[in-house]
Length: 183
View 1: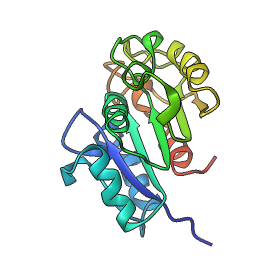
View 2 (view 1 turned 45 degrees about the horizontal axis):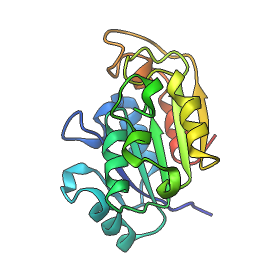
View 3 (view 1 turned 180 degrees about the vertical axis):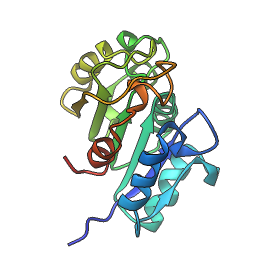
View 4 (view 1 turned 60 degrees about the horizontal axis):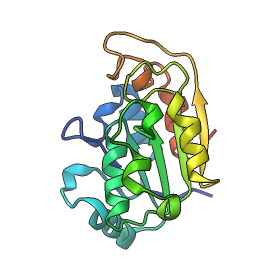
């Protein structure tokens, strides 16, 4: 039996939702999601409209967001988007993550948070997505979020870019598997 999912991925970094990923991760997502409804922010329908658009095609709708995209996902939920599931990777989660603009501060309360998966690298060196924010977010979420830590991979260049642990460099299959419901 094939598992069908719909995903709207978001990122503020570039005009492509998968740009935060290495080319190998983007290719792996394409393979993992072949035959399912998929939209990225180039659809230009934004926030709750994007979730509604995808829900009309196929449920469940999973929003997958990474880095600054986690802020956009939180803003969409705060404006009424109701995805069935949320995946936050290398997220701006709480003040402890390193930024006062974060998912917890935007939402204010975890009441609107759907079942959420946090994917985070234990050695994420980005000053805005420090691993310290993960546990405080899980506590804040009150059981609505589970955490998947990843380790290993390669760290090259800017710690806030795709070449570092922040971008899960070298961990493509692992991250895609987690985000799409695998282990």
